[in-house]
Image (cartoon, rainbow, N blue to C red; front, side, top):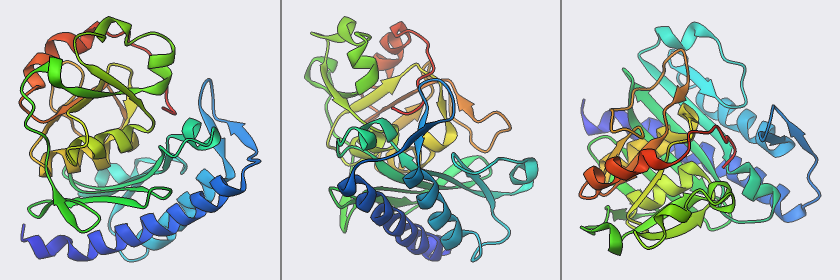
Length: 271
């Protein structure tokens, strides 16, 4: 694949992320959100739905042959027959969004044959646009970024789920690494790709839309991402649940694979 093949997709994905981000930003500043639920510990707001509609409008018409998988769109099997598939989370980090914490993001990925080839993660409050496309690296706004070179866990900053931290699930790692509670799986992965932290991991099952954009970015930034036991990730599967994740600068990966499975296996979606 030539680099130019993804130019249009990346431009439109970033535009869609900004449009969705503006919807989220307006709701976030206004406050007083009406919060619904899609199941246990899985809140949803009108902002999620409006952001999803904006992204869908921006990306589906220009690429009618591409499949579609979004947290806020009813799924069907049509995407399984597509070589390229958009995977979208219009609001990753809904709990932080509801609680007024500026650690949520719009996440958009393009998958080709099960592999993320493009990733856009946008924090609309901090105005941080993380983007990557296969063969052209990872960028934070206009600056190219890479993962860190930290070699030992004791010196590493590892981003943890706020909910997992509040439940005490990261206590076992204190003293082993610097644990930094942070919202949004996609945002944590983007920060690792940009060298703002050394790693993140969870053994809690996550959905493809939580991970896909960040997976593209981590790889393009020189890092490594697998499931919680070190297996390669594949996307656009019938079952969208993935067995957790470990993402890091590549140097720390073997060390993290040895200790990450110590975490309890739970399903906490909106973290």
